[in-house]
Every structure is written in C-alpha cells, then in structure tokens.
Image 1 (cartoon, one colour):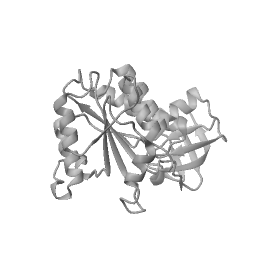
Image 2: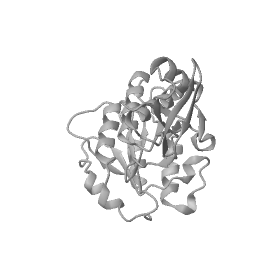
Image 3: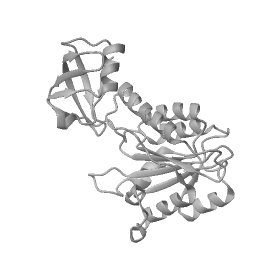
Image 4: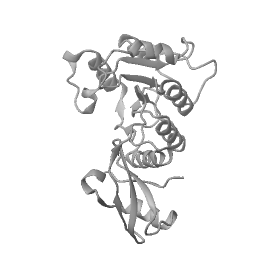
Length: 262
C-alpha cells in the first residue's frame, strides 16, 4: 500500500517539504518510515507528488519531492448531498463512505425532524475522517463539509442557484449553481443514473463539471411542508427502492448511483 500524507501547502513548500505535525507523527510512529523511503504527498486540491524522506523524528518528517502533478480522480459530475445528519457514530461511517465514493461536498441540513445538528467538535472529527479516507482511497481532492444550515435558508440557496438574478445569499452558498436537484422520497420513481446523466450533459462548458444536488432527509423523513417546498424549487423526487433505508445507507446509495466516471 502506498504511504500517502496530506500536505495542504505542498506547492508553496516544494521541493523540500516538512509534513504537518500530525502527519509526521503518523509517519514516524505508525508507519515507521525511514530516511531514504519513498512516500506520496497530496494537497487536497488535486495535486500529488512522490517524495523521498530526508530526515524523520518523533514529531518531524522532512522530505524532498519530485515534480508536483495534477492527478484527477474526480467524477465527471460534481455531486453535492444535503443531509439530515444521523447520530455521530453513524455520521462518521457515512462521511468515510461518501469521501471514498467521490462526493464533492456535504451540507448538514437542519430539517423540521432533525433531532440535533452536528456540533463543531464532531464536524472537526468528520473533516479529519475526510483526510484519512482520501489517503486510503487515492483521492486527491478533499470532500467539503459545509457548516450546518437550516432547511429554510438552504432552500433559498437552491432557488438562487436556478435564478442568477437572485444570487444574493450570503456566504459560499451564493456561488453554487446546480443543473439538477433531486430529493429522496419513498414511493417515488426510481433514481436512474443514466437519466440524470442525460439531463445534465451539455448544460455547462467543457471546462466545468455539471453539478447535481440530492437532498436526503433525517430520521422520519421530510415533512409535508418541506417536500412541497422542494417541489416548488423544481426538485425531482426519486426513490431508492422498496425498503426504508437509514440516512447513511441512503446517502451511500445515491452516491454509488450518481458518482461515476461518465
């Protein structure tokens, strides 16, 4: 297995790179790298490089890297998921799976039936899981986990994304533009990847990937009011089968069907 380490400032440090303290400690204490070993570095925004270990201590690892290259292992379509988060232990497993599958970003949404939004310390842990999952899977781009937001505010962002003249939502939500919006609902037409593909192809320039958003409600599902609001926003209701799925299972099913190298 290739030993991979996350160095967010890889390009600015190159060619002599000092690993962040947590990565250096893992390299020294867990992986037991030695001077002269070769490892792989990535910066979380699409670049990677092979590097030779020059020196290593308990909390420090200095390497010299070769040329940094852009290695694209992302999907042809950017999939964003807006999710009513499950309990912390299940959220951790969900984030691990979604990162491996190639989801672009996750929005923790506070729906009407959400029991408790994720706390800041949980989000910090989940973002670390994203890094670890990228290291394991060979992904070079970190999946974004956005700050929690309530459904009403997020619905305004969806509306703005389809109406450029309305894009006045504060923060990063205002920059998003989704070519297709889906909402997982029981007793709805099945989610078919090829149909979604055909509906977004050619909707953006070749330099940019089309974006698809899928909403997945909390335990108990979306309320009738929230579902009607999704319909008003042009979201298509899609089914995931005849069985009731847990949140993390539903999110993984959506990702597995839509995040493909089309």
